[in-house]
Length: 193
Image 1 (tube, rainbow, N blue to C red):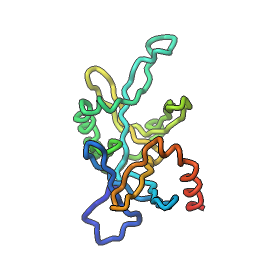
Image 2 (cartoon, rainbow, N blue to C red; image 1 turned 60 degrees about the horizontal axis):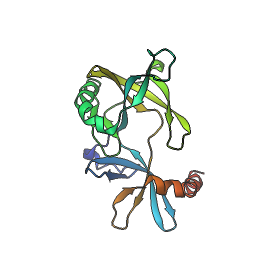
Image 3 (cartoon, rainbow, N blue to C red; image 1 turned 90 degrees about the vertical axis):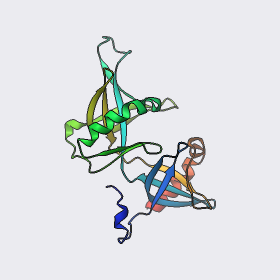
Image 4 (cartoon, rainbow, N blue to C red; image 1 turned 180 degrees about the vertical axis):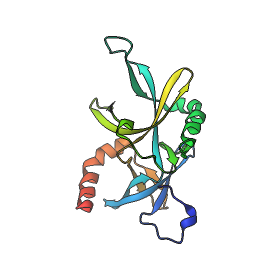
């Protein structure tokens, strides 16, 4: 569901805040939860629009027969070249692709998922622990003889942020988040109970 600024008469069920990255790009997010930890306000945020991932099909170097292909996450540096094609393909689904802060997003209504459009992908974490993420495939396109797939995660994409004294909202640094993760999760589960 996209945020419509014309609907200001209706009170929002969840307040909306904006994250900004180093390039000045913005990401509107619903505040799902607000937590007070040691006098600091932490926010659990959910993007207003659909998060979008771009994957590319590449040969699997580990496969015994070299003709198998796997999906690989596209590096941020490559997104600028792919963006016009990706935007055009999603426009055919009445989705508007945006170069938002921290993730690509698409405004519009998510097409209904068929079972064949959904898949699981094993993603390696920095600590070496692989985890599985589920995605809905939205579209595919070709660019420079490579095939790309546009997807949205089936699980909500959540961000932890802090609200500063001046009201600005800053994403929690991943290293800082890991240091206080158990404390934040304990507080979050207390709020959810």
